[in-house]
Image (cartoon, helix red, strand yellow):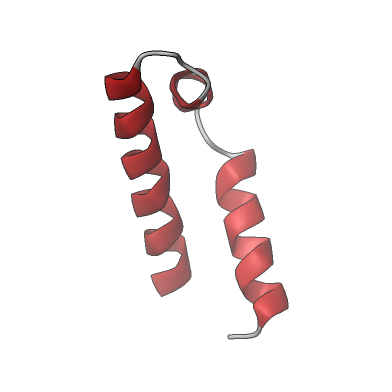
Length: 50
């Protein structure tokens, strides 16, 4: 997989991230932000495996 393909897959995941995830990523609540970061990381990892 090329760097360009990886970038496109990551961009697609971010574009389709649910609103709650976006809000939690911007949250000042460290626990909420941490969960959102873990969720986004898992979503990206799954997309890269596909």
